[in-house]
Image 1: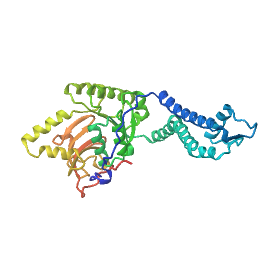
Image 2: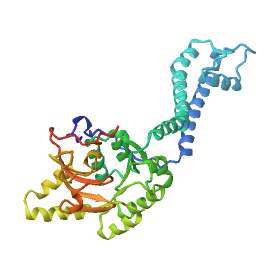
Image 3: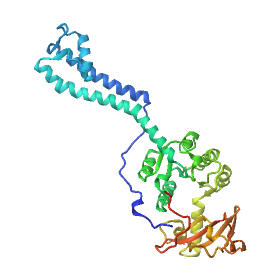
Image 4: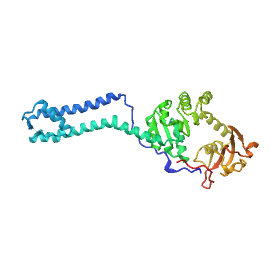
Length: 359
């Protein structure tokens, strides 16, 4: 059953920090962290060497430079064997005020480095594997620009669980926005085989492509069709000359927003309410909704004018061929037919067989 907009599912706009991708390679980042850590350790060695008179070695009673280095390392790592210890008040004050904060800073650097380069990656791989296990019959959105974001927003409004939507984009800000909406996200190149395999593209219910450029979108369609021969693909194409190329690449539906805008403009010239009604049909927020569904079992044998949903039947697809409501073929619906109908989105609407929100 179609739903009216749920305010809890509205995509909320949040405050995002200004970010820029680091130009440093991983090895430079790691070297910088280790360099800072060893620089802090060198400071502690210098402080201990200057104040070596306040240290006592229970082994031979002498404090050499090697003893200072040894004491510094066991002090920074909080090992503390007790063979060398501060005995003067000044040495103890130095340990408390200078060495302890440096010790904490060094530990944070080492723990943070281990998390960044090892623990975090292991955790993310485990978490990704868990998400992949549950990915089936999902909707993959390739490109989260204006069109992609609006498509996701409308899907959520229509009752699709955001956990059943996977968004791939190369922009970190767009990925953050999709994640805020509750979707599964993957930052990467949607035309790359490995990226699409990671989101189990062959198990998807459908794929929506809106890359912003026609050439990129067509390349993505080719890649998706190669990996998922039977998954329906819808793509946004802005140049009319590229529509045929997109279909040849494997797209099932080619949407040209420029052409559609022209149709709305032409329709509005012949009637003040045509454009409003077209927008009403396309959005779940309107009073009516245009949708396609398989014919229900109890509708087989009926006419298109007598749908159990209470909707107005407009077209039937049978064997890949469309039949309008005025044609004799629609006077008797058959199993396997696809029905295009207009239904009411008012609270009193009838329940449609087999049309339940996806979980």
